[in-house]
Length: 195
Image 1 (cartoon, rainbow, N blue to C red):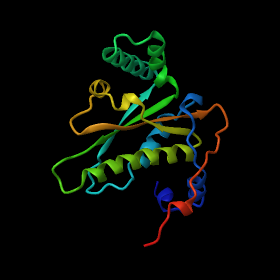
Image 2 (image 1 turned 120 degrees about the vertical axis):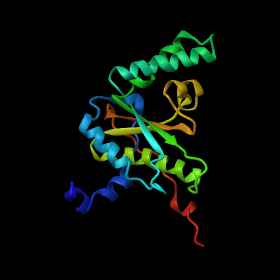
Image 3 (image 1 turned 90 degrees about the vertical axis):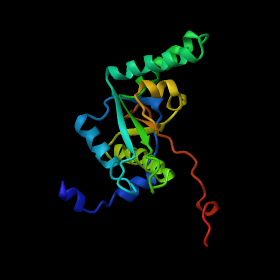
Image 4 (image 1 turned 135 degrees about the vertical axis):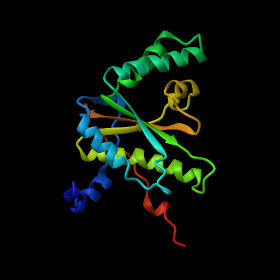
């Protein structure tokens, strides 16, 4: 492990300049195995973290847990709208089946301390982005998604979210079934100013 930490990463810049998200709808297996997933998560925990608070945690959805999560979110949707169509419920039941592995990243803000809540939330966002980069570096494709279920209090309750916790995103990880497409990138000159 120390060899990895002390060796230069000549391909890191190329990875950052070429990384693309892959559509969750176009993912197939295999996803990362237990060791690969642990590596992705270890990389994610190396993000900036003012105060060493670890203001995030992970919920893993793989195997049958993906179908259980689909049933959970379909039930939550039915509770909020009893007239929901059977077609929409089927879409929700299949939502977490789109990728072989999904990691829920939970932001855990600690209030009443000197570290601003905003910095804690940014750290959780950095966790999501680092997972995308690590998964890509390992030959997978990944997508950071929230969708309605990340913001639904019923879903959060069933996931066991505590006070101060919310979903920062669901990171879908798998293999691409179609070539990844490049998208329009911003013109740097329009985003940069000099003070």
